[in-house]
Image (cartoon, rainbow, N blue to C red; front, side, top):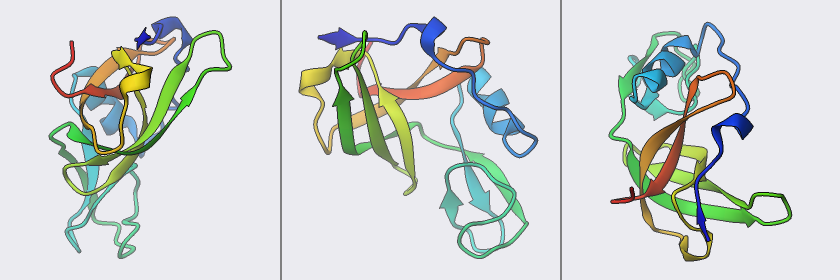
Length: 135
C-alpha cells in the first residue's frame, strides 16, 4: 500500500514567534534545527532556550534533511492508513514525523529517509520523510 498524504488533511501548524523562522524555511523547502551558540549542541524542536544548557543564545542551522527511522507505528484504523515515526536526523537529534511515499508494510527500523515537504490545510509546508531515493 503506497501512501502519500492528502494536503487537505494535514492540520496547519501553529506558527509562533519562536518557530516563525523554522516554518518560513520549511516553505522554502529547507529543514532547520535548533543550535546553541553557547554549548554547541543541536536540538529539535526550535525554541528560545537551549534544552541542554539553558542558554538564551540559540539560533537555527540548516539540517541535511536525512536520517534513519529509530521507531515507527502504522495506524490502519483510520480512513487513510498512515505511518508516524521517530527519525534520528544525521545531526544527532530526533524528530517525530510522518513517513510517506512508500509501502507502509516495507517501513523498517534503521531505514534511511530524507525530508520532503507537504502543504497543510493553510498552505504552510510541513516536513515529512520518505525512504531515501523515493519519488
